[in-house]
Amino acid sequence: MAVSPLGAPDRATLALADVGSVLNALSALSSRAVPPWLAPSNPYQDGVLPAAQVAVAGSDLAEVIAVRGPLHAMDGWSYVGRALNSLISGDAHAARHLAYYGELRAALSILASSSIGIFNRRNAVIDTAGDVLNLADRPTHDMCWATISEWAVLPNSLDRLVKPLNIAGTSLLEPFREFFPSGTSVAANYVMTEWGFDLAQGGDDRHARNWSSYQPTALSDIRTTPASDMLFLRMFWEALRPGGISLERHLLRILLESEARVHNAQLSGYADPYNRLDDDLKRRFSFEFMTRVTDATDHDFLIHASDRALPAHPYSMICRAALLLRLATGMAESNLTAAGLQPAIHFEHWWKEFGATHGLWTPGTEPLSTPELWDDVDVALEDATQAPTAHRHPWVSGLAGNAMRICETERVALWGLFQ
Image (cartoon, rainbow, N blue to C red):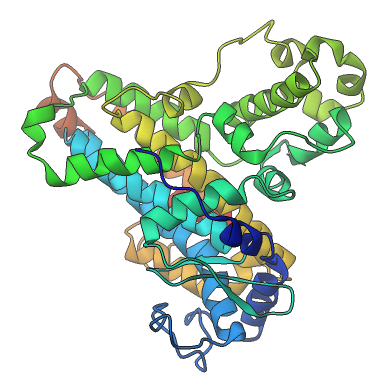
């Protein structure tokens, strides 16, 4: 069932959201220790706003919205981790339930990083003057998917989604501009559809979540096998590893193809701009790959994410959540950096405590840098391949402690935000 679109007044208000208010609020974090994330003077320490008829100061709301960017992304990755844990346990319905909340948190994070706050029936944006502009009082789930679909067609949305993604230290936005210097005529929501996540799909996945959450699951049995789960888990983690390019180069290819189609062209005709790319980038993104002469099939991660089969498969919902969270995490980190912060340093106490609390390390043994968090996952995946996959009990028994490690997707949030 499709989510009802925003009305014309809300669409006009949404276009006035100004990320500068978020950056100003985040910059204030450099002058004090975190936690707390909100200044002691902010009256909404738990992030809950008063009833709609009570006025909220723009500076207070801007601060609440600003911290929701990174924090919703962190929470979203935790939901994905619990979805993976449910998958290993053979509970596909619980995996769908939890994956949907990963999707929702990612969408809320993207909107918050764009100065748009979606609360329960109290929704607003902050404009360039720092004023609060109210949106319709629709409930969170409904308003979130309607709003992000409209946000995606705003002029700067595609740049904000793409810029944090990179290959070999080069933002995907740079080669895109080399090919299409005049800018994009492809709306971000269309590109997202091409990448495997139609933003409207979040509303549909909500219905899948509702079924898994409220109906007797035996009436719609969804099963996976240990063998397929193990293949999925390895593919999933390899796509998200820090510094990896396997997923990013597929995203860049689809992005370029999408824009080329608008110009009624094929990428095979763009040899000149390709040749102008940095040599290091070309070694990782060959012309043959770009034109699908080699490795013509899309990444399995994106194939799962684009699967619209009903009932929605847990692999598909997990990949859709992770793709959105990858984008949300990049946007949140970009905001922190643009606000003049060095996330790994400014939030050192917080992320170290977070990792210890979530069992990623014992207190005092945190990694020197968050990308090192991949090492434990890499070892766990290697060990996990030795576990027998004929039946679930011996597989889970064989995984032992590795079952926990390969569900710790909070690691992705940490190396995405605090590297």
